Amino acid sequence: MATVNHPAFIKRRKTKKINLGGVPIGGDSPIVVQSMTNTDTRDVKSSVAQIRALEKAGCEVIRIAIPDHEAVSAISAIKKRIRIPLVADIHFDYRLAMGAMKNGVDGIRINPGNIAREKIREIVKIAQEREIVIRIGVNSGSLQKDLLLKYGGATSDALVESALQNIELFETLGFDLIKLSLKSSDVSSMIEAYRAISAKTDYPLHLGVTEAGSLIGSAIKSSIGIGNLLYDGIGDTIRVSVTGDPVLEIPVAYGILRALNIRKVGPEIVSCPTCGRCEIDLLRLTEKIEKALVGKKDYLKVALMGCVVNGPGEAADADIGIAGGKGQGIIFKKGKAFKKVKEKDFVKVLLEEINLMLDERKEI
Image 1: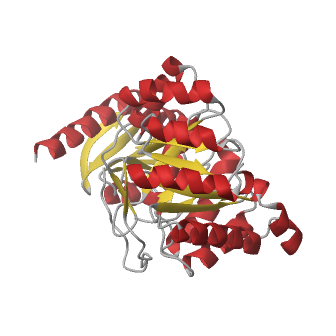
Image 2: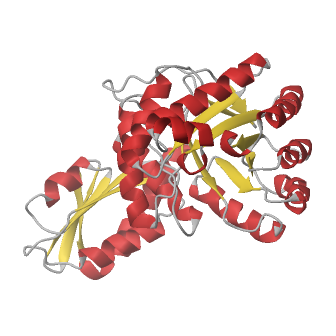
């Protein structure tokens, strides 16, 4: 699952390597996919259930909201029942950060815009003692008031200055287990901020477009924002923020990584948009195959093509694929025509062959 396959034209920016609960971040480590629960953290059962669903989908680091001391008390119970590193998201009350660290989180995320500097010093002291990673999470929606006045709003320059001010504070205190994020709901500002900060520091960067909207809107904004930066070699962890079920974020995140040949995780489905030449129900076929392959971690390129124009070429270029004709199609495996199948058997035969290929790989 940790395959790294950077194409030659992407030269990844070298960053400081840190360890977050056993997951390496930065340096030459694989780019990590993160998410955040939207359950009530105080409800341990539902929070654990969602985290396990995220784990199954491929999430590698999970963040939980800590709104009060009751949520702090739930941390140890959640931590015992999950497998991935746990990060506490803290706003306003520095005591929640202190309690979260004492209850066993692997990292915390604080927003410098809503915690007093003298209180940040106390947070850093405990994090230093326990070797806990801190993400300095600068956000366009909660910047320091003086910076908003100075720059006339939450500009990319304001985001960068906020990050640099807090890096200076942390370094003055002798703390360097730092991860940075400079998030904005404006894609252009987000890209500009990350490009600027990457030229000024070598701390690992967590990429994301904040408040990106529902699935389609988020996929578009995240692909442009995160994708542009990754193409520039910038970024060590990513999160695709979706309004709704966070499990939906994971396939989009891995889709971005696959599209840039950065990490080959999970099946890649190539399917044509269909046209007047299509004589099979390609939409139904694609939906059924996609649904059946949810949660698969091994990479496999699957081509689902609806006609004889580009179909045979695309199917032959994939690990496995099908080129459809009227009521039937030809399955290709590893570039060669394998067998002719009736349309009613497409899903059954394709899944049988896909599972067989995945099983064969495990045996090697």
